[in-house]
Image (cartoon, rainbow, N blue to C red; front, side, top):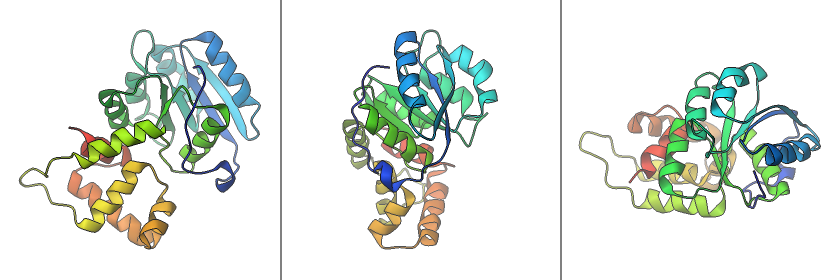
Length: 225
């Protein structure tokens, strides 16, 4: 997968140290092996499987019971986005992150729409990717800085809600903005000075008004041009 360069919103020290089961989906065997090697050496990480294509991953990965799957977009045959689209319904509790060289908005939103909760560029260095994996498992949505900027810019260009769609309140828009930025729920609650219960109420109302069922779907819907 190459080298990595992504500042994580949450330091590794702030996140719980737990045993994470990881899978990699990357077609470059040398890079896949290199990445698996240093992830396996990280305390609390276990690389349980590696795949070189979407077809191989869809056939066998559900049986690996991973906590986090890192997926390259540019795979032979079916793309990494198609890989997540097929696997997410089978593994609803598993977190998927795209790790790629692509920065264009279409691929970002397609990945979010099918269930990815992280989007990292291949320039991310090792220590920061490890922090991003822990953040992803803890409920965050880590994104490389320039990717997050593209998402936020698209969110601010969002047109007015269509006729018949319930308008979000100013507070709900604040919460949605923070969701788009990829903050953890606790960080959002602290930033807005509200309890976790109140935050979850806002999030439920946002999902109802946007007619979505997950954070990734909400982000994808509001950031589409």
